[in-house]
Every structure is written in structure tokens, then in C-alpha cells.
Amino acid sequence: MEDFFAKYFGRGVNEAKFQESGWQAVVSANTVELFVHIMRERKGETSLHPGTDVMGKLDKIMVYIENHLAEDIRISDIGQMMALSESSIDKLFRSQLKTSFHRYLTQRRLIAAKTFLKGNIPAEQVSEQTGFSDYSTFYRAFKKNFGLSPTEFKRLQD
Image 1 (cartoon, helix red, strand yellow):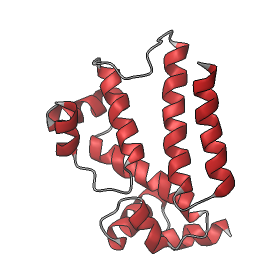
Image 2: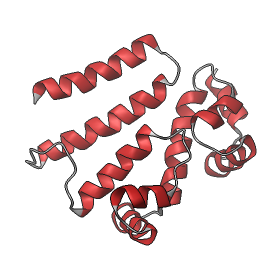
Image 3: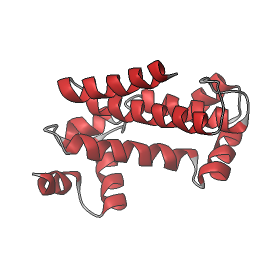
């Protein structure tokens, strides 16, 4: 088991060290997955693969989101992958995370966007790398959630 955690930790360190394109997204996804596995170990679970229970399905969906953040993620596609209805997925998010699937996805993308904006990536590219359909959608969501535009946030980081 120690080799497993060392592998994930090492992968995150290497991504941060070499900072190739998209490294922040990889580190974020890797961190979430590592956290999930640590929590499972803490609960005495030995399986590293999500089971068929509610939390296992939620974990699997969350890891999928982390690994595909820049892509067009549709609740219907996740439903097919997980053999769940769209309403079941949304109920799962609402009951376990107290938010809707779409709100979770948007928040996760915005958190990743803040990480990218701290680097030398233009705001327009950040919107693409975090899966927003266009810059104006990204701009409105960012401003609504954080109270300032992506460019203003970036300027504050310099």
C-alpha cells in the first residue's frame, strides 16, 4: 500500500516540477484521487476501486470529472457510464454534497481556473482548459462566484 501512495505523491511532485501543459489539472485530479484513497484506508477499506455503494459511485463520478475537466462533461454520458439516471446522479450529489451535479461541476472548473490563472496562462485559454463552452460563459461564472473578473484575479496574483 505504501508503494501506491508513494506513486501518487511522486506523480504530483513530478508534474509540479516539470510544469508541462495542463500540469495543474493533473495535480488537482491526482490530489483528489489520493485523498479519496487515504480516506478509504482510514475507514479500514482495503479496496482501491469504488464499489457499487452510494459513496463508491459518487467517488467514481468525481474522479471522472477531475480526469475530464477540460472536456464537455454531460450528466447523460455519466449516467450511461454508471448505469444511473440523470435524476439519480443529481439526487446523489444533492444528498451527499448538498449541491447539484451541475453546480459541483461548475465549482470544480472554477477552482481549477483559479489555479491556471495563477500561472502565465491567458484567461481565454483558461476557459478552454477548464471546459467552459466559451469565454463569456466562463467570465460570467467567474465574476458571479468570486466577485471579480478572471483578468482582475490574474492581475492580483502578479
